[in-house]
Length: 289
Image 1 (cartoon, helix red, strand yellow):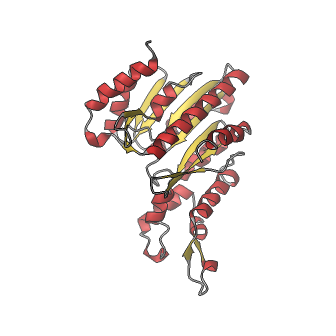
Image 2 (cartoon, one colour):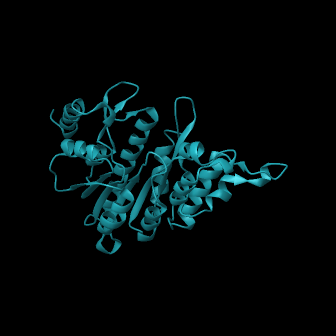
Image 3 (cartoon, helix red, strand yellow):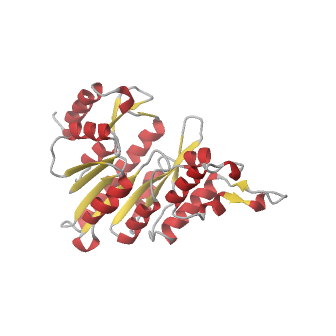
C-alpha cells in the first residue's frame, strides 16, 4: 500500500545514492536508539497538545538537522534522520524548521523533503538563526508551542540558546550533552594543559566559567591537586543549570548514550515546563536504559 513512509524511503535512497560519501554520517546503534526516542516523544507531545488545545500551533525545530538521512553502521542501510521522522509524526506539527551550517546538507534535505509550505530550511550558525529567526515564531502569547532538538556534534551549542528557550516558556528541548567532547578536550587530568580555545568553547556551551569548579575538585586529592570528577557529576551539574538558571521546571534524569564498548558518548536531556514530560520521558527512557 502507498504511504508517505514508503515514498520518502524511496526518495531517501535516490538522493542518498547521488550524494558524496562524506556527506552522510554513518551512525551506530546508539544514534538509531536516539532517533527512536525522539520520534516517540514527539508523537506523545503532539497528541497531548492536540487533545488539550487543538487550535494551538505546534512547531518542530531541528538545530543541527544534517542531510536528512544517515547510513546504519549495523546494516549499511539508509536511515531517515530526525527531520524526516518529525515530518511523519502523527498528529503532525504545524511548522518544521531545519537548520544546518553546511549548505550541502541543507541542499540534500530540501531535495528529500520537496517544496512544502510547512517546512523552512536554513543554512548557517544555528545559535544565531534560532535566536533571530526561529524562536520568535514560537511565542507563548500567540498560542504556539515548540519542540526543539539541539543535537550538536560536540560543543557547538551556545548557552544563550538554552537560556532563551527556558525564558520563553513555550519551547521544550531535547538536548545532547556531549560528554565525550568535554572529556577529550576540556576535562583533562591536568587542567593547565587545556587549550584556551577549548576552555572558551566550554564556557560558551556552559554559559559562564563556573564549569571549572564543577569539572575539577581539589578535595579528591590528598595534596590539594585538582582532579577531574566523574561523568555523572558533570551531567548532574548541567541538569541543575537547566532548572535553576535556564528556568525549566521539569528536567528528568538524562539517559546516557553508550557506544559498543560501553563508553558514554553523550547524555540525552529533556527540558520542559510541563509536568507530563516527566511521565512521557520515564516511560520511553525505561525501555532503553
